[in-house]
Length: 524
Image (cartoon, rainbow, N blue to C red; front, side, top):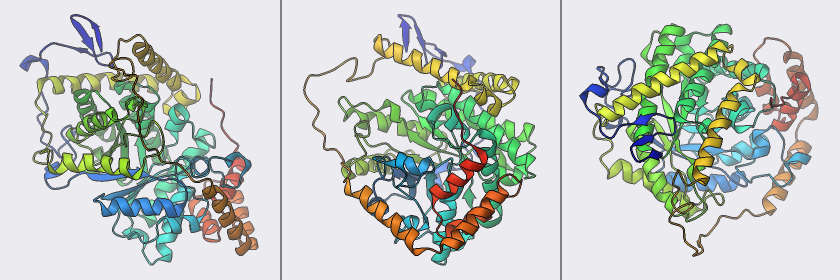
């Protein structure tokens, strides 16, 4: 952002000099794959292990989303990423009164194991890595996935993927929470322990800065609040008796790839360096796998514009390049039409092709950390790390991430940053091409994806058939056991698995836990 003819700042408030030289940053001495992993978690990075192209998809029915998955896999996508509809994310069945008009609208509707089976039909679960963007009911959706695999003869040891399972950011950025923070944290650590025993190759959490940035945070806040949440999860895991070297190896992160390409590259590098020191010095992790931050990146949804939507193709390409040069382990590129609707198949294919061009034509896989040693990038890395560390210390002084969230402090910080950004756009200080400069009166003609309203009716009919055909006594017995265990310290996931196997629904199980734990109202 320009603040005058001779002064420029990043959106994190870091002053940018006209030119950088040897005195501005010393640069990291360590090679990629060595502590503190500034230059990447692996020695050769993409030369040996290219990033996974993981396009986020989900809409309408399980069958429709399955068709989109299989199309993307057939066109070269290398991993699945499941988007769930709002009722599923909030633990409501599709026939709940609050779900009317929302079924299948922002993702796929999954009410039961049978829906999950339809979603995954024909997909080799022992070969494909799957990511699930689900938080409050994350344990239930992962258990549905595990049950479908088991019914097909695929053992838990063969399953690979990630479940987001990051409830803390929901309280400050996204709003899709159900229960209060402390019982929600219990579910999170229950899932850690369950997967260590039954699904050992699964990443049990994707600690998310993405939605913090989407809510309007700066790059510094994205790093700091994400890592502060990570500290809270590690504290809870240690309190539950888990080993930092064990659970630390299955932690992953999820960051935003925004427009300022070089700041974003530096952000990813700073986050790796800072997290490595946190795991070693605060938690005593001794293995490289537990110390090294691995992350998925998604291009910035909040940067997409409804005006001149084809400009978004350029934004997404620049953001994806930042993610790749920053060393992401997997990347999702947004479709150009997503400011208007769910992506069409054409738009989703172009988003995938963007990654394929970057990987196969742009030379991005030839060498690790290609911008390492740039005086500007190294200076930004140092500054972002220092400012993020200072902000984490402020969170610590408030009693940690959970206490800071409960007090409403984190939300206030993000809201102030979001307000500043929007004011700069409205004042013309921050240029958004096609929105506040280089506009046109010509209408934008874009074909949009439209949902068939019959999908919701069909989903309700399937749900009614499920309830009519199951053993109601077995379901009632399983739900009663969950109620019995809810006030205790016992791991809830085995009981939840038994209930789902008996064809209890996601909404029924979340409803039982609502009655036991209550719900959460945000501090304002």
